Image (cartoon, rainbow, N blue to C red):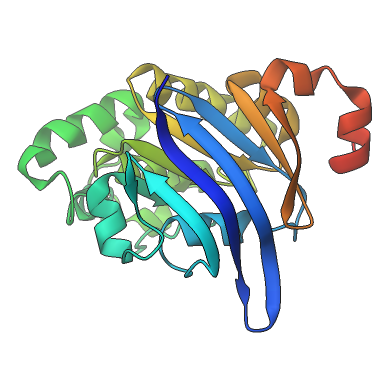
Length: 236
């Protein structure tokens, strides 16, 4: 496998506070990699740094072979690294179709209709609600819309930030099945989550983030089978 995303010695933070303290991570083409950790350990800071919202203080980020740690958010999106942020952040007063089309504003515009049809095939409920205002959707439907909007930009790597947050157990189960479907369609995924059990079930490899550093990493099955690891770093 070739490295699609490679991070070396990444440091980032806010003001005088350093949150990420020298991270090394690799996502190979065709993989689902999960980053697991409790609240406050730096997961969202990692996502913001990768997508260019927060500038790295030190270290290297290479995507598809090119350095991106000094690139703008727009340039990073243009490369095919697409971040679906925590909290869905749909446009409530726009329709489902309009929200989706905005996802192709910077990338994928020439194939907007084909990409929209692909999203509707993955998320049939969005097709049923295409003309409905996004603000009237359920929480699970809004999460599907947020992911679908990310897919409209034809991602080479899709970063999903806490996609299961706030969803019922039944919807969480459905969501992780849809993540596997997206991956089967050829999209590499970086899944940043607190949902340990289901994240490890769908991922190829996992990293455990604790206090701004990766405490452990390895094959997802190996980490899932280690009760001491889960007890020590994930509070389970």
